Length: 218
Image (cartoon, rainbow, N blue to C red; front, side):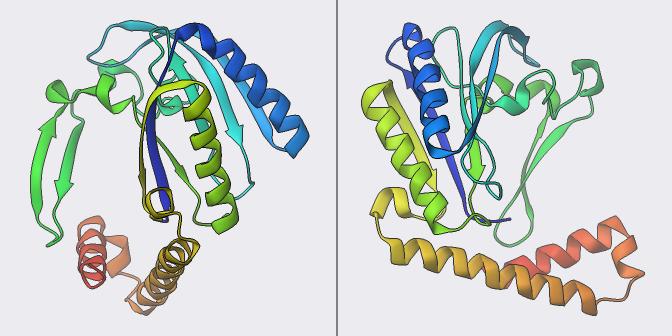
């Protein structure tokens, strides 16, 4: 939980990737950031064909999740979480019972997608960077970086900013959204501390508790 920026982009040309990575590495040295080059390597996503991937993971702030600047050999972004060494899904043969459950604002199940119908290739095109705990300055820095890269390297970019700064450019709105989440986290911590310890040991009861709690803030 926390204000997060979700984004996907496509390079104007795959040939620009090397220049982008070099510029990010140089910028990192100047700004005191950490950049890690990834690849090149071949990747086979579940339910998908093999593809080549390469790029950079950028750490702007120690309390902020990494910025994903990794692309496949056609120039489309690929989320690092799907890559070997980071893979959150495990081996494909272990995924047969995996399903994605969508929960509505009322806490009820809206849709269940079984493993064989999950579009991993489309899912992998979106990356996410949580900025909540790094603060508004880091959030704005990421927005400005994405805007700069869009103008220079990207043929297209789509951003979904939970802080609403990307769309509005309003610091006040960003601070308001971050403060709201901070308040929710504080209330959640107090809420769970007040529950009987035996109730928190039951997964189903805990999930119901969390759903009930979250609905109060919708």
